[in-house]
Image 1 (tube, rainbow, N blue to C red):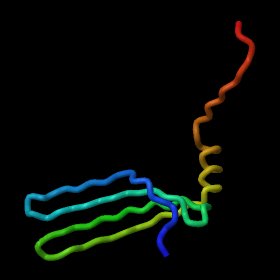
Image 2: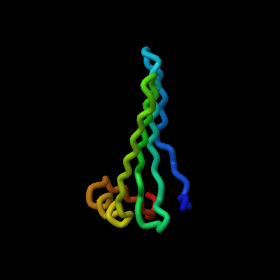
Image 3: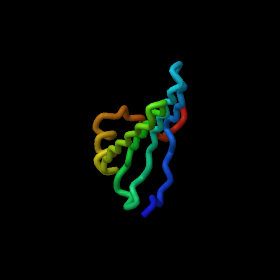
Image 4: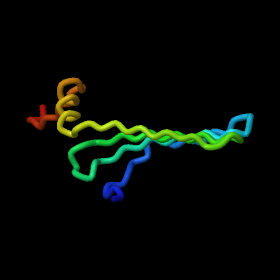
Length: 85
């Protein structure tokens, strides 16, 4: 079943090497179909005269765990409204 949530492309790179090899890399971020996890995907392809090699890796983190981490480790920015001097 295909993903319902579209990915946000964070990085897309295409490099042609001197030996005519082609190296493709893509990093993307999406919300899981259930909406409770962020999924970071990294995909790499290498084309050469010898053939094609590719690898894909995915890293998942629960949104609630990420928010807790951001609150405890992030730099707080507090805005307040008060009387003007």
